[in-house]
Image 1 (cartoon, rainbow, N blue to C red):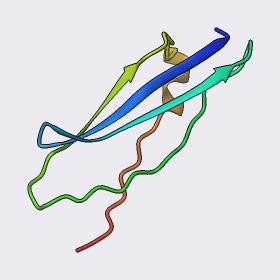
Image 2: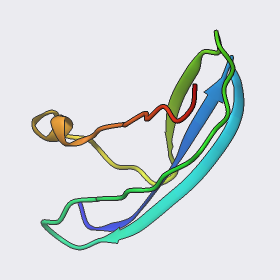
Image 3: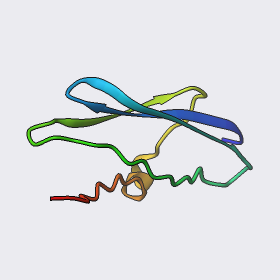
Image 4: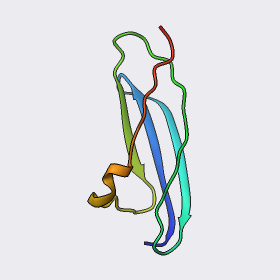
Length: 78
């Protein structure tokens, strides 16, 4: 549906929040919410990385479009 959409993308290391980015956009009728951003985090061997999405304005990810939603993790280091 049209209107302002907003959510937080939370990154956790070993259960502790290390990044909490907010993204928002106004959606026009018959349009899709699309966003892209990058975050760099430092991890140690054995750390567990997890993600959470918290919607601030209601929106629905339709099952037919779920394949369009991706999280890419790129390892930079040794």
